[in-house]
Length: 164
Image 1 (spheres, rainbow, N blue to C red):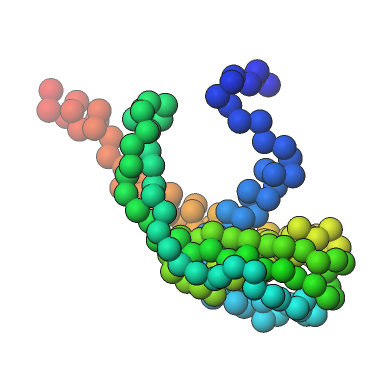
Image 2 (cartoon, rainbow, N blue to C red):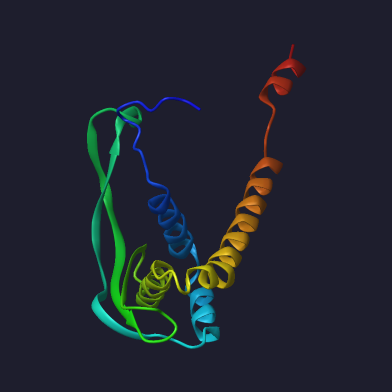
């Protein structure tokens, strides 16, 4: 284990877990989330607090990952915040999401599942029935894209030796 430097963020385990499931929900396809929501029973009552609404955010970068910040450009983002109550959640919970693009349904469903994941009564069920299958499909997709990219690899050292 390495010691943390002042620039390394220390992320509490519960925050790291939420970051992981939010990444999975944000990268999921809208159709996958719609299917998961349609299969979910019983559904909690959903009240919209904010959105879903689309807007723009400024994407910033850093030269050499640590240098001076600069504005890279704008990205379209959709956000939603919902309050869930009633079965199956144990108490009122709030879920929120920000997803790239303008898919309002995607942002709303990601916020709903985030709210259910915040409730300890249904967290394990949501992880087992929604998040884990989505992570598995995303991992398979990533692996197939990486394999496709590796198949186009050119060994320039070998090519250079042929001309000697």
